[in-house]
Structure formats: C-alpha cells, structure tokens
Image 1 (cartoon, helix red, strand yellow):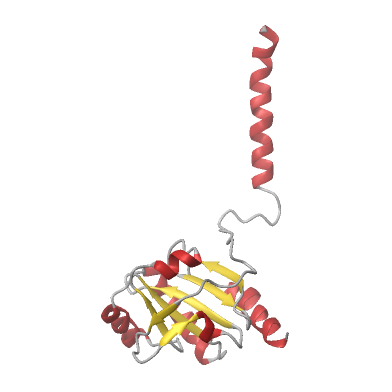
Image 2 (cartoon, rainbow, N blue to C red):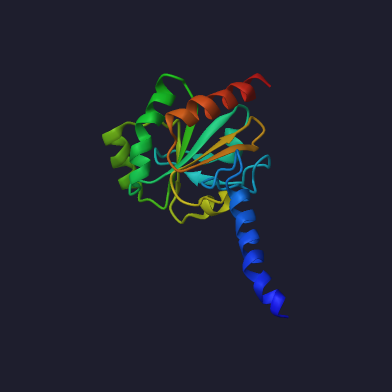
Length: 178
C-alpha cells in the first residue's frame, strides 16, 4: 500500500503529460468547434427578409454553392469582418446570404446602410431559432453550403483573409466544379 502512495504522483504526472502531448499534437486547433451538421443537409428554414417581399429559405439556396453568414448589428466582431465580406461579394463575386441573428430589423438595416451590404438577401432570425438549428455558437458564424443544400464548412468567429484565401475560396471553386 505504501508503494502505491509513492507511485501515485508519478502516475498523475504521466496522465497529465499524456494529456498535454495529445493537446499539442500537430494539426490540432483548440479554437476549432466541430459541427455535427458537416456533410449533412442544412436545417430547414424560411425567414422573412430584411428587404421585404419574399423569404430566405434553405430550399431557395439550392442549385449553387453559397455562403451563409450569421451576423448582428450589436456584434463587434461582425463589424470587423464586414469589410472582408464586402470585398468577397464585390471582387470575388461570392454569393453571400446573411441571417440577422437576434437583431432588430431597423438596427440591421442601419448597420448595412453605414457599412455597405454584401448580401444577396438577408433573412431575419429575430428569435434565434434558425441559429439554434444550425448550432450557432455566437456571431459571426459562416457556413458554406453546396448546391444540394449540404453544409460543407463552418467558420466560427470573424473570417480572416487567410481563411478566405486558403479555405473558403478553394472550397467554393471545388464545389462549383463538381
């Protein structure tokens, strides 16, 4: 029994060392939040639009690869990401659809009037139900959806130029070609 007490610190050290070795392995990203919806059909939604007249729905997005961005006027990281979304929509002609998450329509409209509107259409998710169905952790979150309506990629937090260059644009090109 006494020997077991002397071995306990060594055993605890080995367990902790193993945990840290696992967490520091190459390619592991502690910031990544996996999505259970990857490669599955996007949740069904049918939202009134900010622009009025019509809706934004999952079925309406089918037919071509698209980007769906959850944002809010009260979200500071969304404002940081916004110029990048503007460039994507104007220079790279990426089809971006917005979902105003738990936001007042007038506040979302004011934000877009001030900063520009990169979205082809904007759905209003005022109660957060669509975000919940997508598994939105917090805004901004961006999803790449293929022509059949399946989620192919999830970006948590504001997009970076590196993510757009290395992941988003190549994925959209691949999906458009298939």
